[in-house]
Image 1 (cartoon, rainbow, N blue to C red):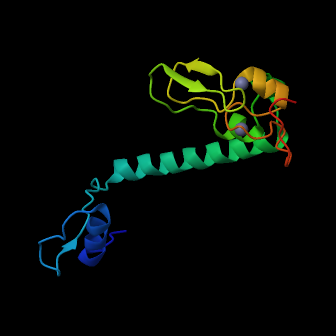
Image 2 (cartoon, helix red, strand yellow):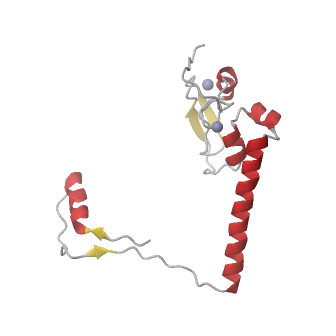
Image 3 (tube, protein in one colour):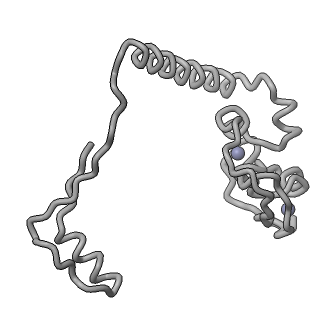
Length: 148
Ligand SMILES: [Zn+2]
Ligand SMILES: [Zn+2]
């Protein structure tokens, strides 16, 4: 969708940042331009394959989420069903990254920028998913005592 941005809005933003009002005419509209690739037989086949792949993956993840076939491995990893089955592929920059554990505040070193929310000892101790920091069994919990 192409969205037109009114300069009135831009002017307000500039004012909020403490800058001066734009000097261009008030009837100017900014239009974002997107260059789509040419559609041909190859692209239709490729895009259909991609759409099928995405839905197949979604269905597979949903079935696994429902049946939890790798529960033992999942709990060894200290991950909830959502993180284990839906976020199986980690996407992150390949840079050594240090992050504190959200529970004990200890610094943990990771091999990518995709870091966990809590360290594994805290995940085990508090029954938390290390990746998202939620309950590893996805139970509703209102009480969390870090020193318990
Ligand atoms: Zn910790
Ligand atoms: Zn999780």
